[in-house]
Amino acid sequence: MQPVEIYTSPLCGFCHSAKRLLDEKGVAYLEIDVLAEPARKTEMIARANGGRTVPQIFVGDTHVGGCDDLYALERQGKLDPLLAA
View 1 (cartoon, rainbow, N blue to C red):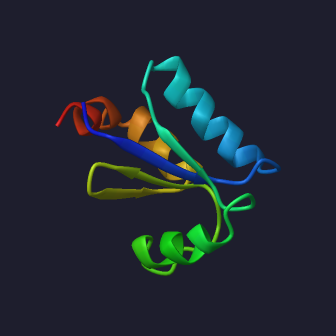
View 2 (cartoon, rainbow, N blue to C red):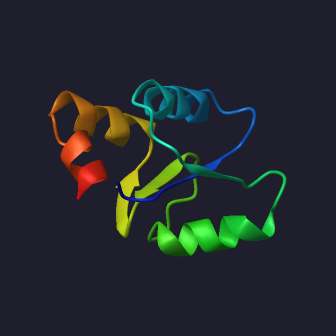
């Protein structure tokens, strides 16, 4: 299974929703709280090609995007293959 990283903020409903989907699928992920670690926000923006909002989700080397993007992959049946790749 590919490693999953998710940049979050504790006050973000979209972050909680994205983590809930990953939890339901039994996917382990590394959560990076940009509120607790402000220096990591610069890293997130660079990795996400300028994306400044949370969550920013990465599966392996693939930038998935945000919560809506994660759910879109799930609806299209593309999330499981991406996770397994």
